[in-house]
Amino acid sequence: MWIKKFDLDPQCRGIRYSKFKSEMGELMKKRIYFTTIVAIAVFGAGLVTANNTTNSLAQSTEKVSANTEIVEGLTVTRTEGSIIVPKDVEDLIAKSDIIAIGKPTQSIAESTPLIQRDFGGYVTEAISQTKFKVQRVLKGASYSDTLLIGQQAAIVADRITGKSSLQVLDDYQPLVKNAKYILFLKKGLNGSPLYFPVGVYYGKFNIDGTDQAENKIENSDFKLIRKDVIERFKEVIDQTLAS
Image (spheres, rainbow, N blue to C red):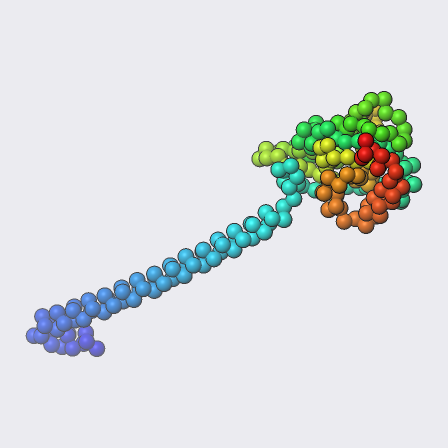
């Protein structure tokens, strides 16, 4: 409408143009001012949202970290496998070549890792060779006071990053250095010098209360067999702990 008046009145062109220019300038200032406020508000909201998102991610990361299983400073990766579970204590004894009481003299980090990989570099087997000082033999014969125990756990380097983690089979918990155990062992195949706990973790029981990780195994069959083992061998266990 203002443009039409301007066109019809050329004599007032200078005055009207100045007024038009002035009013348009004010209008543009208001628009710029308003746009700036909106932009600041939106940017500020974006910062708040970003901060909230960052905080949420941090909290989430903390929760994940809090639930991560750590053994001897290493993140634990658990794999599944077939386990031959003994029916009861009698079956556990029958399946054992040697039953021994003693203590490991190496931690899992000090043990010798025996890793097998496929052509792609993926781990197909991860076990550790751990020295175990024998105090008493309850079945079988040990020709040395030290047995080599094959543990279903080993420190493995990631094939891409090279970062080390502890790869463990099922619910197995690594032997704790100098903690005392009663072990139900099966000789390794093909002339192997290693002895493996029967049923992965069903043949390994801490007897001096220093391996708290064993209590993390929630399998009811394991708990029942452990209770029966401690009762069955109570006398010899007490004698060993007292010596």
